[in-house]
Length: 123
Image 1 (tube, rainbow, N blue to C red):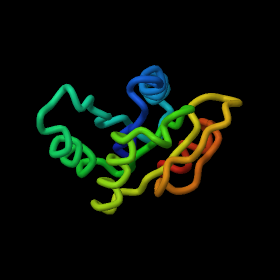
Image 2: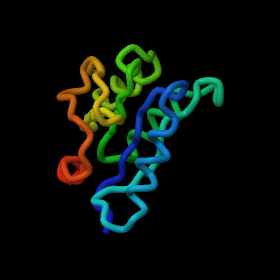
Image 3: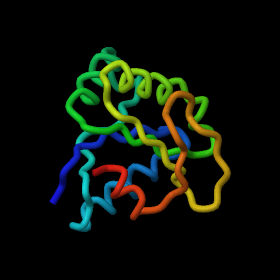
Image 4: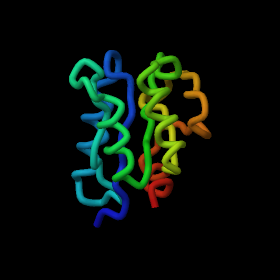
């Protein structure tokens, strides 16, 4: 049973597959969380920031799926700041096994990908 609603933040240009992978794993039936809403493309909406703020405000956690360039993606940086402003906990995890990645500033500790650790962090 799901206990947490999670907003997934990621680098749309380079790491779109990470959203698909995390959603697939949460749908297997043993997840402690569900993907409630996720990143929007700025181009998709004139009210991107307002819509993002509304989505994050309806979630319990923001999960930043980190790839090689995520740490410098302006949209991800803004999503993290919105979460912090709203008091929503931010967790960041490297989305690729064995890839060295820089942490996203202000997003807390950077964890290596591990499904069991992620499930605990989402409790």
